[in-house]
Image (cartoon, rainbow, N blue to C red; front, side):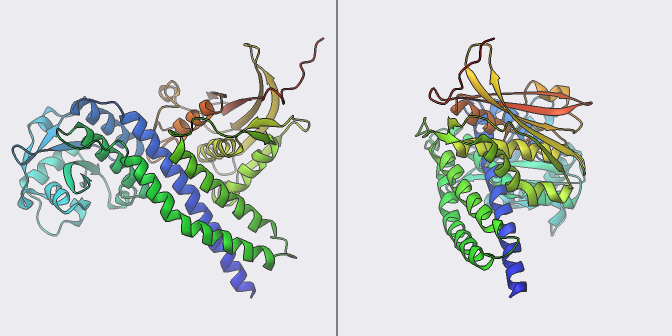
Amino acid sequence: MLDDLQQLQSGLRSARGRLIELIFALADQEGARARLAGNSHPETLVRKARDLYLESCPATEAIFLLVDHKNNQLAGIVAPGQARLISELKIPLDATAGLVVQALLRGEVTSSFAADQPLTVTDQLLLRICGSQGFLCQPFRLEGEMLGAVVLGVETQSQLAMLQSLRAQMFCQVVADALARLSSGTPDHTSEGNTLLRRVSHELGNPLTIIGNYAEVLHHLLADNDNRELPAAIKREVRRIDDVLNYYLNQQELPRFPDQDVNLNQLVHEAVDALQETDLQPRQIEVRFDLKNDLVPVSTNGVLVKQILVNLLKNAAEAVVVNGIISLATRDSFCSDGGRFVEVVVQDNGPGIDREVRNKLFRPMVSTKGAGHAGVGLSIVKGMVDDLGGRISYYSSSAAGTGFHLQLPYGEDNSPVAEHA
């Protein structure tokens, strides 16, 4: 009985972590979609898409080839900083031409590391342009139509997994959608991304329900156990994930969200609980609280506020070293324009943000760390803060770490009475 209970707890924790990971993947996807929107020329789109790939994965280079249907070939599109030789690439759509064409024709990712035959002259040329030990070919297809491919330079086989992750697949979908809109005579696929979100949301419906049911069973099993709070925490996270998925699905359709009186201090604690076992405890991170006890409830959308706090906490956890410190504070704040705001501060003692990143920190897919870290959700955080009528700012230095200041407006009925001297 005890072993079964421990296995159930472990499975539920794992499922909760996986669902949280998916939320961040969706956030990254929507950030990439915003960054690629509105491009009317292949060269502009390729430049931005290349930047996104190099920022979000360990690739040494990203070479884009688009389908030239008239001449039945792949044509290279050169981006600033790349070898001009790329613009001269003309690869026939013949399976014997090399790995990149095979990937496109099959609709499957291929890799030079897994090649079961000698590399063709084209493959060797792409390898030389990438300047790496190997490469991966990722095809762009939408509704069966071949649009192009990207060749990503890879140094080691161990890096292939990152280039084939869920986030990479979703990002590939965004690029394919953008390419489809550029293709002459191609139907408008502007709703494709939302369709993908709806499909993901639908597919998550059953496991979310199952996890909720297991949590209910666990609640009864742990009625007299020290871990009895775990089922309630899991059920809260299931509801939050469902609510956030609905936010992404409806953000274009529902510009306003129902407000309610929210206990901000409670949301801070719940955000910490959501990441305790996945991001905080494994890295032995100490969380310090400095919460204002008599903070007045805020009339706002608690779902969005909690997701903002989870994103900021996750970034802070990834920024600090093992045994690092994250400090959380809440306080009343009075802004210079006369508006009444309440403030949450998320402060870490990490190395700070590089200067070249600071002026574009809230842009989609900007990284605050090295390769493989996608600046999780900061562009989405900014969008959610704007939806709430709030503000977000930060300060960062190598000595003090990084602190994010989230300011949320009090509703008219909740705003505290200003004290006069």
